[in-house]
Image 1 (spheres, rainbow, N blue to C red):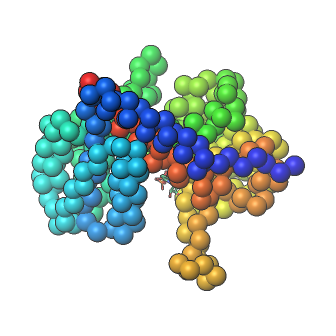
Image 2 (spheres, protein in one colour):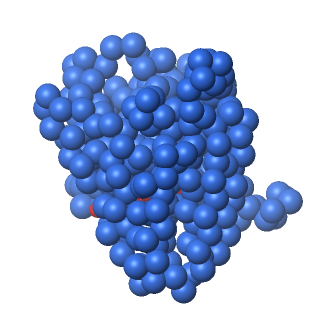
Length: 291
Ligand code: NDP
């Protein structure tokens, strides 16, 4: 059996269209245009590309985007002063600080400085803490985990009682995905670099979310027949046949796993496009919260 391919680009396009429609309706109703401030510190080329793509996506759906660039030599105080200025700016509903920050800057302190009402990345400890607490809701859910859930729920409208395995426990992907799955009443196992007998644990999964950053680590023999597999990994592997000299692969050996799984996200074209779509959705929500 060959797995259904979950088309992240198509789902993301649908989310973007919904956001564009809602922004248009706000503007016609005389409400303020949602605004996203993107803060880039230093000149990391990958970060520059990410910020450019996020700003372009904002413009496409009618969200105002404001770019702020600071040199890699910027001090902690300078970065935090910019965040304070954006916290107070009524045109800015969401603040995105592109990570990683250059060495020497304290990322957590910068993230803590963002007002939680503008924390559209969902990385503020208050938002993550609320995600972990029963009976409380975060204002924003981190974008990549939220995107994983949207795709999963298209495949499995109910996750109740489902055995879910999450590979990875980072603050930005693994842990929030696991928390979201628990909130959806799945039974969740979180794996990491110290997990023993990883292939056996993965074989118990009806739903597998892989976010480890290890190219094609999950093999076909690790996967339960019919499982739904969400591959978050984005890894570059050298490939002289490609114009850029590399290609992108996930944390899952796609060609093997697609023969076993029931459904699978490809890389590229799976989780990646969903991340930006969820950022747009969070920015719209931030503007609505400010109304
Ligand atoms: P991190 O490096 O922060 O976390 C990786 C996690 O994987 C850690 O919990 C680590 O365990 C675990 N891990 C590492 N090696 C192994 C192993 N051999 N066996 C089991 N567990 C292991 O990565 P991120 O969470 O930030 O990102 C994960 C992947 O997702 C990357 O490929 C990244 O590029 C991609 N990504 C994609 C996004 C998208 O938009 N599609 C957005 C963000 C990330 P331990 O905690 O023990 O160290």
